[in-house]
Length: 290
Image (cartoon, rainbow, N blue to C red; front, side, top):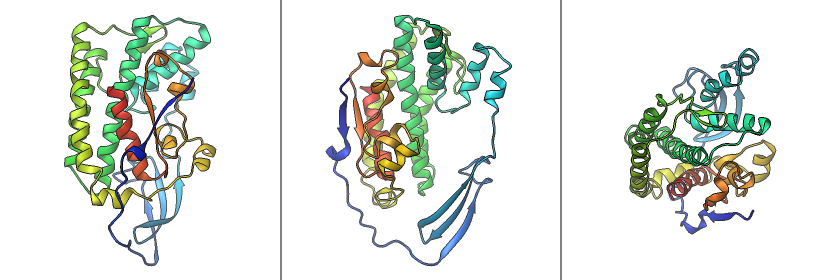
């Protein structure tokens, strides 16, 4: 299947104009596990030269959810709620991945309406996930409060949709083998369409404020660069991989569900830096609402 690729070169990449970065002796910092950005689950030993990270040693193992062992003592269906916790921002897609695995093993056919509903929920999940990421990124860069609340305002609308459909805002436990737990009403679908139709206005407003911002450019361009080779060898997937210029989107490669029935472009970066990763999310949200 040929993929339609959208590179971010169509968008002019603003030049960095913040001058030279701070330089000096290496400063060793232990970041986490008790740190606002790590929530007690992760630690980094960082060597800083001014604002540049020269060395970083990640320390894992502060959190173990024990999903595999729990799965040995419960039913296939009983394992579904645990997939919500794999990433609480992507509950619906985690449900779908597990349901799809069991369906493929058991040869279960999913009704057409349920397949379409799954795609809708997956793309709504993408919207609220990417919006949250952009909000938190700006918050970590020093723009505390306002950008994050802008993103959360839109995210809350989608979480309200999830709650009205599944009974839960984040841990939805909604997918089932062979379909979904309950059908979506016509009123729910109309409400979802209304939210999606208004989402481009938020995107345009958000992009106008951040993509040309001098601080954002200075703190994201040529920062955290990742080569395509290293990304592939490390098993990196999704927008982070595509930001390195690798044309790989599982929705196109595998064509699961009803994704083959939809036409959408795959945004690709070129530099593999934080700015490209930011752009991947912004462009993917545009594709989702299309």
